[in-house]
Image 1: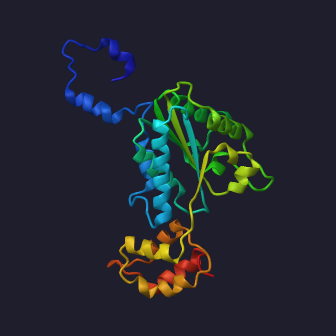
Image 2: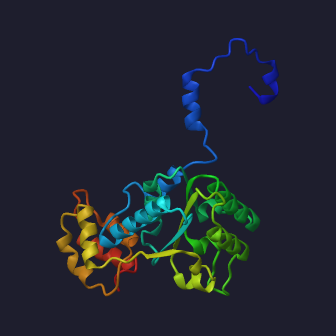
Image 3: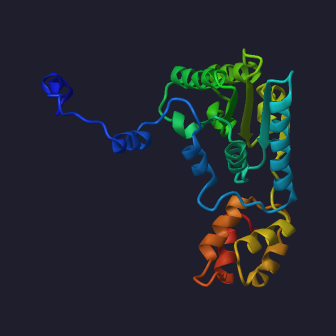
Length: 278
């Protein structure tokens, strides 16, 4: 029935049951609160791969910082930059930190969510998220892939100065209420770019997300329960540079047989196709 005909509806026998409230809770999305679905999508079905001490220490450092922020009477804002080469687990780490924080207000600002928006709309959206964050006693905002948010292009270089100034302002703006706390976690693939844009110094804490060395590759294979890793280990040993974990996971997925064994020939070929093997 259309909305124009509501005045003709007989409301005498209308009843609202518990089932209606339950359905409303699942159908209606709150304007405030935690964007857990978006964050879980960033982590993926398999979850964050904690392949070594570097990742564990990073998670513990972030957890310690947020604990100190909760208890501090003077500090109300902490901004954390996760920087590392492309295809490292930067957004997965940021999303994991956010989910584990259990803050009442958590929002993700992603380039994918801003696709098609004009520049003014993007800045308005970013500013609105931070305005909402300042209204909550405990808030956490994740900025995914700063370079893409800024529409940064190396040729020129070109970027959106309006978005840059908006993010700079939001990074430095403390909550008005003394009791309110705000954590900002951003990801980037180039600190050199952020330094040129005078954005790097806006962050209180900078954490480096590393590439995988041989020991970390061994641990990833163990976590993935690959039974015949020793057959492809000589190929991995020939690598002279670190491996981005997302590329490694792709190679394993494309080379894995039904019994959790790797096809050595396919593994080597896929390593070459993805640019990991010269």
